[in-house]
Every structure is written in C-alpha cells, then in structure tokens.
Amino acid sequence: TYESYPYDKVLEIRKENISPAVVTYYKKPVLIHQGHMQWLFDWEGRRYLDLIAGIVTVSVGHCHPKVTVAAQKQLARLWHTTNIYLHPKIHEYAEKLTALLPEHLKVVYLTNSGSEANDLAMLMARLYTKNFDMIHFRGGYHGGSPYALGLTAVGFYKQGLANGFGCHTTMCPDVFRGPWGGSHCRDSPVQTTRHCSCAPGSCQANDKYVDQLKETLNTCVPKGIAGFIAEPIQGSGGSVQYPKGFLKEAYKLIRERGGVCIADEVQTGFGRTGSHFWGFQGHGVVPDIVTMAKGIGNGFPMGAVVTTTEIARSMSQALHFNTFGGNPVACAVGSAVLDAIEEDGLQKNSEVVGTYLLLELAKLRDEFEIVGDVRGKGLMVGVEMVTDQESRQPLPPEEVSQIWEDCKDMGVMIGKGGVYGQVFRIKPPMCITTEDVDFGVAVLREALGRHMERRRSNLR
Ligand code: PMP
Image (tube, rainbow, N blue to C red; front, side, top):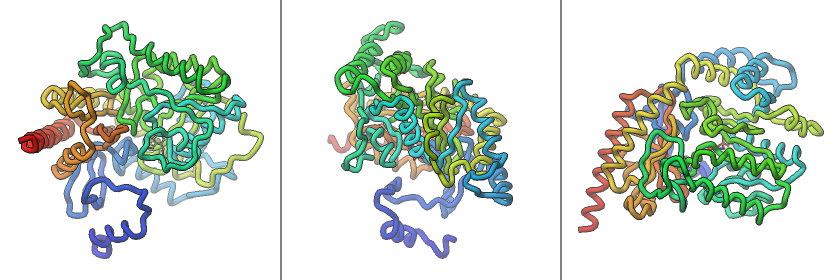
C-alpha cells in the first residue's frame, strides 16, 4: 500500500535495489497506482492520458474488463504445466491466432517476450537455411537478450560488448531523416515534409534505398544469408516509415540469396496500424516468420513466433524448452485480447482515430518550426522534433525532454524515441477517442508554445 511504500521510500529502493539499466521516465518519476483503458492514475489521484501505453504494449486498454475476467477465471483454474500435458487453452489460442495470418503461416511457438521471439526466429532462420548471416536496419529494435541485441541497432541499447556475430546493419530507408525521399514516398494520411524533390508516383528515393541494400548484400555478407528482419514501421527508432514498395523489393532480394524474411510485429501487430491487422500487410508482403509480443497480451508477459511447417520443422532435431511460454493464463489473456479487438472494433478505431490524430498533429507541424515531421499509420505515430524545418537537425534531447515533461505535468504521457532521442512516439491503447486526441494535442500545443517562448528568451 501507499502507506508502507510512500513516494520517497519507493524512490530510495529503486535507486538501491533495482538495476540502473531499468530506466524511468521523467525527472520526477510518476508513482502509478491504477490503470483504466486509456487512463493512468497516480497515488495522489492525478489522471493521465496514456499516449504511449507502456511502450505500445497495452493494446485494448488498461485492465480491459473482458481480458481481466478471462485472466481471473484462468488463474482460479490452472496456471501452469509447462506444456507437458495437453491443455485446451493453447490450442484454442493457436487456432485463433493462425486464422488471422496467411494460410501457410500456421505453426506457433509461444514465448514470454519479444526478445525471446526474435531469438527464436533468428535460430529458425539459421537452422532452416543453413546460413548464418542476418540483415537488419539501423534504428531497428528487436530485443535486449544477447542474441536479439545483435539485431538491435539503436546505440542507447548496446552494452558495448561483443554481440551480433553475423548480424549486419543496412541503411534504414527513412524518407524524412535519410538522404532521399519525402512524405509522399510513404504510406501515411499526412503529407508534411517539404524537402523531397521526386514527383509523386515516381519515387526515386525507393530505388536509391534499394541500391543501399543491394550494396550491403553484394559487398558485406556471404552469398547465402539466413534472413532479414524488419519492423513494418520502426518503433523505438522513432515511428520510421519506409518508402512504399521498399519491403517488397527487399524481400525479393533476400529470398534470391536464400534468406527468409522476418516481420517483427511486436509494435505494429494486432490492428495498431488501422488499415490492416498486421503491419506487413500494409507493405503487400508475406513474411516467412512473424514475431509478436507487447500488444499480444495487453501488458501480460507474452510473445509468439509464427512460421511455416517447413521452417518450424528445422528445429525438430532438438527440444526447445520454454518453461512459461504458452501457459494457460497467457493463452486465456491472448484469446480475450483477440476477442476484444474484434468486439470493440479496435482496428477500425485505430484507423479512424489514428488518422484524426495524424491530421491534428500535422497542424502543429504547420504552427511550430521545431516540429519537423508528423508520420505514421493508425495509432503508430511519430512526431520528429528539429531545430528548424529547413535544416532538419534533431532538436537536442534536453529540449525534447522539457516539452515532454511539460506534457506530463499537464496530464498527458507521451513516448520518446529515435536514434537521437528526437521523436515523440504516440501509440496509445487502441480504445482512445477523438476527444482524447483533442485533449492530447491541445496539451502538446501548449507545451510547444511554452518551449518556443523558452527558446526565444534564451536567444535574447
Ligand atoms: N521488437 C520490437 C519491435 C520491440 O519494440 C521490442 C521491445 N521494445 C522487442 C522486439 C523486444 O520485446 P521485449 O521487450 O518483450 O523483449
């Protein structure tokens, strides 16, 4: 209770007994007491609109009643057997999940996290192809476990020790920060960036980025590769979108070299991008392996790898043991999450409210010189902060943080990301409403206005 663990005591224990690698948001971290749908409440009863959902994890809403009841029911019946006996829950879940994927993606391996899922996907890619080398984008985040960390290419998360043998980064085809492209090259309802020189409909940026991938494949790696992993929209990298058609060409190049294509749907899956249930569908590609976590369990620790029968068979020469993966409680939760997405119309809500959010945020881009780019699909949104729209230099992280702290003080929690810490990430629970968007955008507008005032007075 709060009486036995008041704020100062919690902070003290945090400093003393919790690893310093576990970061907290905000100079004065918030002591959270409760969550309800798109709202969080602290111990003093302050309410916050949660626009980052525990880093894109709460998909259907904090403590969604249907999911909570499903978990409670299962908790009262059976928690655990390590899958050494048959239990209906895992089978029910596997059936429901695979029904949402292309037909050939039908074998499920349940894990407890996204890092585990990506570890396993990499293992499968290597065993199946009998090749070793993996290709991944700079700016991509695929996990923090020693294996998956090799696929993560955001400097903040690298511990500076040997990792990632055989993992090769290639240029992220970022049409805002990269050397080529503009907003019309990507799939988003907002057209906001001004720097692109290629005409709509004939995007040469895509060809240039594809050339970069070709160069990596031709010069940096052996002829045969194990696989390629990409998020359909980069999450931690700052909601980065690629030019339309890029992934299609990339998948072709990878497959020509014997590799398999892995879609990391940890952030983009389960209806978040609005137009589609899976992010890869928005690119017109069909992966060989799909990895999932976060939104899959609405905050319950859970992850999954789904692949083809042939790829899954490559692991059958040995056991792969995961004590908790696929436990009955996780499966009950996962199943209720799928029902809630369907029954509450959350994919559609992501599309409708997400588009409204993007268009409202685009107005901020027009009002403030320091808002460089507004992008995304559905409720997978990024607002890239710059010193000015002309130079597109990243706004220094201290300045980004000041705006972010002000938003929190006014009752709105926003995420941060980007390789320079320059992007606000807005990825709320998918139950958010247009009224919430109005409130969130009004708060961000106020915080940006205050910051422009600070900048002006520093210049004086
Ligand atoms: N892939 C992506 C795209 C992620 O965003 C994350 C987590 N931020 C992971 C994998 C790793 O997931 P977890 O933290 O559950 O291990």
